[in-house]
Image 1: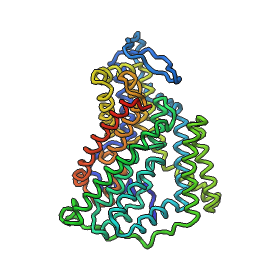
Image 2: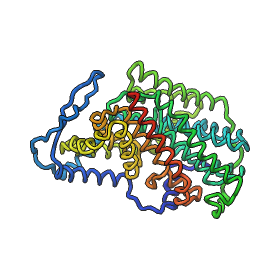
Image 3: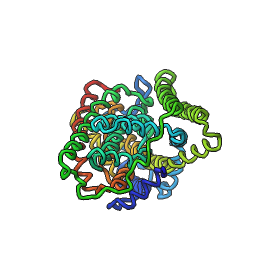
Image 4: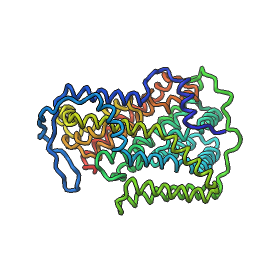
Length: 474
């Protein structure tokens, strides 16, 4: 029986986590308070801004100047900034709800479950092929639809198959977590990270997709090789397993054969792929944005519900349930945007930008891009929500990019790397901690598995950012 992904995460995270990190909403509210306090300490200042050839407003390096003192902000500002933050983010918040509802209806058809289940079953005992193809499926799902929690029902399936193939729980979870971590890191059109970060940075949604697609295969191969090499050691020597002393849960079983992939399922999946292709074309040719993208997903929802014969009432219930599951994400977006509102009221965003950009500019654009990657990685510990982190950091990183000679597209890529890759390791990521809890993998054992991969991804990501700067990635 499939449990709610949100319930699985919550229960497993409560039982598995050794950390007592405040809820992300608490952290964001605290950051709004810090932004208010910063306005009392830092001087107000601003850069001169101009509109460039492509109609984007950018700052002019070297033009920072202090502004006249306009008085201290009232503590009341922290509270008024929150509804103002929601108002300023209304389009993306509504888009998030529509995406959540659409995905829930697609999941209710059984197409996603059947496709993954059949894929895993058909690969049988070919462990290397199982690892490679399954990881690529997880990568593509996260890169395009921003899927993560949706994979949780497949944890028991992967655990059972891994044990049957003389592997272990770490291999099973590595397939899933590394797969979706890479997908988020080099995401092509992820609506929760790429689209939001580009919107904040003033870029066309999904622009620069070519380079991100080109990066997908090498980064996926790095992840696949890491998981495969570990699984090979375990198959050759069971004592090499990081969880050799932890007995598998007897409840780990496939629960029968995977659901048959029917013609209806194939049609539903084909329509979803076609919709994604339509979005890319619409954005590039017809300048579609969040309203049109939301309309496309609504259209997909109606067609899928009709084809799968879900019925009007069931479709509506599933849509509402899926939208409700993303209520927390919507709240995080509004609270995160509130931080920018406070900083704007205090007129200290440019002051912060000047302080961070000065040392980065002296290092040169290549090292500046790598420095942005490092900053975003650190921020992800405190703000594990990709959409929330985009709204907190991109208002600062976009102008820093202007000053340091780094394109805003490269700054968005640095954000993606920092958010996506570190999601595989930060203990503040509830999805990760929940998955580890389900698999009975202690966090310290997971660190021993994942940290060598993080080093590889850090090096590869830094190289990719340097190349982006050298080729003028836009």
